[in-house]
Image: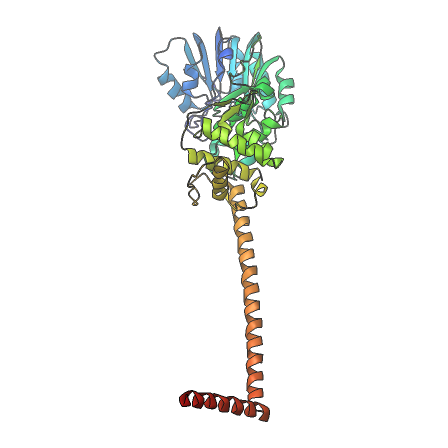
Length: 449
C-alpha cells in the first residue's frame, strides 16, 4: 500500500451504504484486459478477483478501505493499493487498462483537489495510454430504479458533489465525453449491483425480445417497497425501445475493438406479451387457446418466462414451480396492465386467476386471500380504489333499501289510519253487523244439518 496524498483517514466506501460496486465485467471485455491495469474507485473484492491482470493497481480514497484491500491481497503478487485523491496519479506510469465501473463520483477526496466530474475524467485520461482499454460505469440520473424508488434518506455514504454541470445528462452526452466508445451495456436493476448487463444491440433486436423481457423481468423483481412494479416497467421499456435510455446504469467500453456478445435465447415474444395483446383486442378465443397450450406444455412456468417461437412452440426459460402461483402471476400482470376490464365477472386478482383456469379447462382452486408480496404503492392505491368503489356501491344499495323501506312503512301507516277511520262510520258498522249475522247464520245452519 502507498499513500499518495489526499487520503480520507476515517472514511470507508466499502463498508458504508450503498457499498462498493458489484458489477460484473462482460467476458468479451475481460478478454481485452491486459498490461498495467488500474481499478479506480470502490469495487467489491470479488469483482477485483475476476480481473486477469499481473500488474494491478487499485485506487481508493479511504484509508480503512486501502488497509482492508492490502490485507486481502497480501498474498497476491503484482497488486498495489493506492490511497488518496485521483489527481495524485499524475506521477504514475501510464496504464494499459483503466476500469472505473463505479463511475467517477466516489473518486475525488474531500482532502484533495476540488475536482468536478469532467476534471476526474481528464485525470483518468491523462494516465491512460493512447488507445488503451477504458471501461467506465455511470448511474443514470433518470434510471428506472430512481423512478420507482420511495423517498429515503441517502445517508453519508451516498455523498456526491452537487450542482456539477460538467456531468453528462444522458447516454448520448456520455458517449461524446468519453470519445472512442466501442460498446455500451445497460445495467439492471441497479448501477451498483446489476444482475444483468445487456449490450445495446440486444435491447432492440426483435428476435431477442422475448428473451430480453424475461431476463429483465427476473432481474427487476421488487425486493423492497416501491412506487411501481419495476419488472413491468422494464418490460414496457423493451417494447418501446427505451430500455437503454431508462437503464439504471450504463457501462461504456472505449479503446480497442470489442464485440458485445448478444445473449443466447429462442426468438419470439413472451406468452405474457401475446396474452396481453389478445386481451387488448378482446380476442377471447385466442386467449383461451394460448392458455390451454400453456397449461398443457408448462403449467408451472410463469407466462412471462415462456417464449412463443415463430412456429408457436413454447420454450420455458426457468424451471417449473407451482401452477397456481403461475396463474396468480399472470392475473397480476394482466391486472396491472389494465386488462381486468376485459372480463365483466372478476373483481380482483384471485377472481381473474380462477377465470383464467376455467378458460384453460381446469378446475383449480384459487385461494381468495392475497399472497404476501413486496408492497407496490401503485397496487396498494389500485386496491384502495377498488375497495372504495365496492364500498360506494354497497352504500348506494343500502340507501336505496332504506328509502324503499321508509316508503313502504309510510304507506302502511296511511293504510292503517284509513282503516281506523273507516271502521268508525255507520256504513262500516252496518257492514260489520251484516258480516257477523251471516257468520252466525251459517254456523246455525251447520248445527241443524
